[in-house]
Amino acid sequence: MKDYRISFEEEILCAAIVTDRRLLERKETGEFQEKVSMLLADEELYHEKIAMDNQIVLVRFGQDYKKWVEQLLDRNGRVKKRFGEGLLISVGHNVSKWYDLCYSYEFARFLLEQDFLFGSYDVLSINTIEEQQKNVECPSTEQFLMLIEVGDLDGIRECVEKFGIYCKKSLMKEMDIKIQIMYNLMVIRNSIEKKYGKLTVQVMEAMEEMNRSEKLEILTSQYCRIMQDICCQIGSDDSATVIKRMYYYMEKNYGQDLKVESFARMFNYNSNYLGKIFRKEMGDSFNNILDTIRIVNAKRLLLETDMKVYQISEQVGYGNIDYFYLKFKKYVGISPKEFKKEMMKEQ
Image (tube, rainbow, N blue to C red; front, side, top):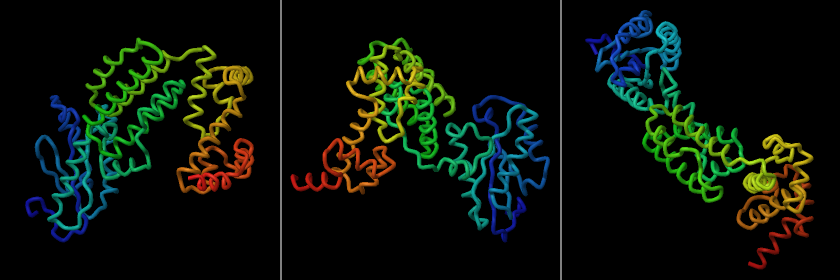
């Protein structure tokens, strides 16, 4: 503490590690020292610096790490502007005692090890992880398969983005992420080939390329592209195929606000014409088929859950509970409460 002039009395201390991605990748660069000199030209940015293992460790006290992150981001932006690529900086959390400074340093080291996940960031901190703490579930293989079959290219992209956020939120290891993606693609390929015949899309070659990816953003971009390529290959303008894909989507997404017009835009059809061929293929109108799917699922939820009637109404796609009662009585003959009561008696 004396060697580095760090006060024993400070109540806020934190450590940061400054390195270069090229050094981490074991590539020689003569720019590192120049970048560091430019970064640390403002001596108020830190209180002490220590050279360790091709890295510079900075120590700061008397200031919250969040404020320090802002200052480092600003200064590193200037470095990036001059050299085309900034330094990689990892900032540890605040500690209140001098003897806990090692924990701030260890957390900064831990963040550096997550570079595969957070490769798009130049300055890492607790905030980097907290930004991912959204209520995002990992999209299932079945969900991706459904989006491929209905031709929803935007839906595929959105689900891949959710998958990337989930990986960051869960701090998944690189190998675990790649194994999950490879598994999903194998299941998708096998399922699609059973229904539509052999794919011309080179899935195995794409998987080999993905396995060599060194950043999550590159990996997910490749993942998205291969699924969209499969989607485009099985896409067909044949009306029977289009209606089949519509119906499959309706079965999986009955709780959403579904309209013929939305599908018409998706498949590049005139909405009136699409409505006519839907009735021809399915034997009933789009709205009646959608109501049937919704009521079937409403009956299931009434029997299998303790949800209130208004909750079930919203869950299956009816925002107005009175309208839900009308539809339920039309298709079942009795109200939702009466239906549940009768079924409970039979059981």
